Length: 213
Image (cartoon, rainbow, N blue to C red; front, side, top):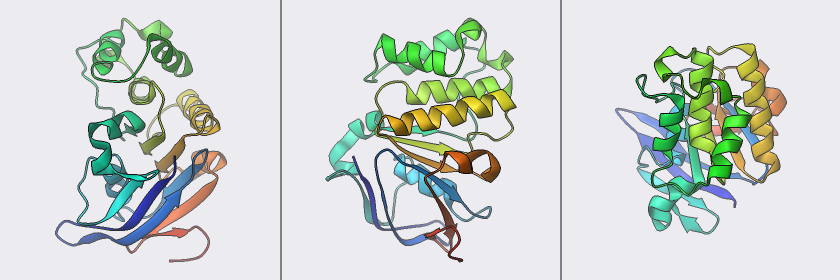
């Protein structure tokens, strides 16, 4: 499924995104870089269906986000920069909770657990995990099951080298299976090797890296 952004604009107190259009193809990884406050997180949250747009449209294949309804969230995975997990629940409990209302199978859950090497922490309360393992849990929760789009905000921020390696491998695996992977990050060194294309978000628009702002 192709993801198409058509002339989208978002403003809060001032414009953040201005008439932005882009097309993202299945099986590709896109790295979005830019200065703090340039709108990277806002753009990704809009694609994930977490921030409303003021103008324009977002389509997956030939259907708008509103046409997809709640099913949009079964196709688009959101991995936040700060893992939204409960410190009092164990990893196993978090995973069971994440299955509610989702189109996931036991097999896909087990695959996500294996991919992020969570087997030996399943009975550990999330609050006792390192930041790296909390991020692994967050990624496993978000990406279990078939996903057309994976949207990641700073997935390697503050984590250990092993987690970075697992994130890199997971990103390429999702793309190889036909997903669109969109990543916003300042960690260019760690993620450029995974990316098929790098964009810079500048003045509210996406510009291929190297073409200038």
